[in-house]
Length: 298
Image (tube, helix red, strand yellow):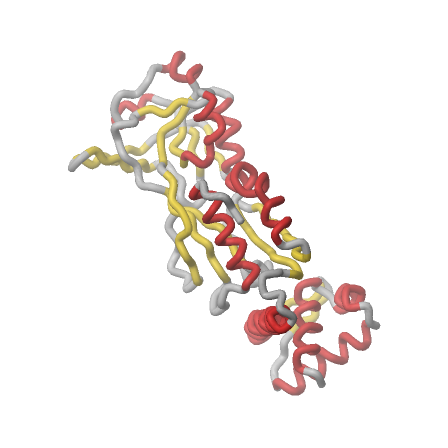
């Protein structure tokens, strides 16, 4: 049995979720796919897949094997490219995951430049404000913001952004402009309830620190909802500059309490546990770093 070919077959089964779908992608018969997986399980002496009426899912051993097999396949592909003198070219599919609003405003409009640099590369973009399971979703790299949980993930900080208290001029005309963090108690706050958000806002000015618990009638689980609600004049919010960059530039959104500092928002490139970043992932992360720094990307 060709080990690399067997790995490719197994990875395809996990990614597609069934023997039949993998067979279609590989352009072989379904019995051939089933036979390869069975031989692989026999050689390794462990069960790799759980079969049920809902489909296939990897066992714990299968998930670990999938992760390393996928990396081995990527390394083999990169070795082929290097041997052909095409080490700068990338091919295949890169799966990235990032928050919806950040991607819409700062990543997706600039993907064309990255794709032009790598004409043989396809990109799957998974947009989700939640921290999805990178291994289960087959993600090569995720862009995550804020403090990272101690999960053992491989991560590298690639940017940071100031946070600020924001609202529309119309809202402030109707409800007044807060002159201190304490005055936020009298305002309607639009609260982002995902990781990194919440109702407890921490301010600092010089050696003075002040913590405020805000309240409001609207809590939202996605940044797009925060944007829409604030832009509809329903309240103020604590947000990164990234989230409202176009409106801050146009004056549609106004910052208040500028003399008070808030914790900055860190941006991390996160890779699945135990996996070295592939050439595709590394190239994409470097491209994003250049975008955020204002340097020409590419």
